[in-house]
Length: 482
Image (cartoon, rainbow, N blue to C red):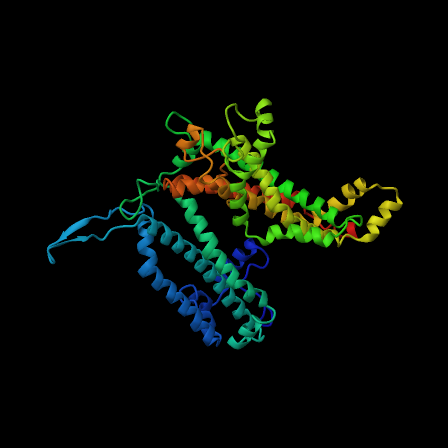
């Protein structure tokens, strides 16, 4: 902190430097700084920062009261996740059967994790406070100005405004993302399933048993078989769904924006209609169109296409229809094709905006140098598109890994699995990992295995994102397109 400003208690200089500053604050700080280890506002009160000292001390008191009344009782049971089941016991005072004072494993897990997260943030706040008290001491000893509480507030509107504006989003991420993620990870190390559902039953820690189960295939346990099949289809789907819509959107945008194309606004409007209609409406209508007795099958049968496909072996003999959404192979093919119809218009709009911003000088220079249209597309258009839309491409891939709507709405109540090994694990041939997770929780209440699968979904998305950001969009290439 200089002149009472800056981020004295922040992580400036790196985490290692921050810890060194904390250690120096304890060893070199005066009595007021050392007192702030117990009473957090002591260092401020000693320098005349009364309001700040009182507020910090009140925050410490709130935390201690929270821990005494709420945190410690749940942390004490966190290791066992509860020992007392819910049951009816006779109360001799009322001569009635009443519910006992039981443990709820899910609440113990949830509030235990919440307490640990709050404690970690409080410890960081406590250490930061000690460093800040030491910096305030140095300012006072050197005769420099020490900020008043009003000046500190003003700094959070001026030079520290980034902290002010980011505080609520960070708090939201912690509450709605980090805490649920930690709870989900913890659930994967328990036996939380249909036989252990609170409050009637308790669940407990089982270590890595669920992870072993996920890779086990036997007569009765088929999770290993199902995981391999569904993981392979998830990756294939994610890659194909991302590339087909991305490339299709670029090609469609180039076609519509080509000077030779007549009425480009009309064509663009027609494709935008596909976005304007809610996706679930489109998918449900398409499902009816491609049903075994739908209009598409009727047309295919009348023109002889069904018979032709039977002759070449793509449709089984005896079927009077093409199993667009009821056969595993056909269903996967149709899912990808329908996703192209749903996703390409959106990518077309993005590509249109990017294509219109490609510097015209690059195109003219390439044509003067003798480049044909394909070479211009390969060496100028696509590199520029990848540079600008790289983050969106990564986002589309991770979104497709977790794309629930398309497959669920097209195949739910229509597709029936023929693979008994998959059925034993509550899975289907057309399911992605996210659908399998949904079925495990909604159909069989197997939360422990759903938690394990959720971890693998997170790992796939994280690894793909890190690789893409490091390979595809690293570095500053803006000068290449000037």
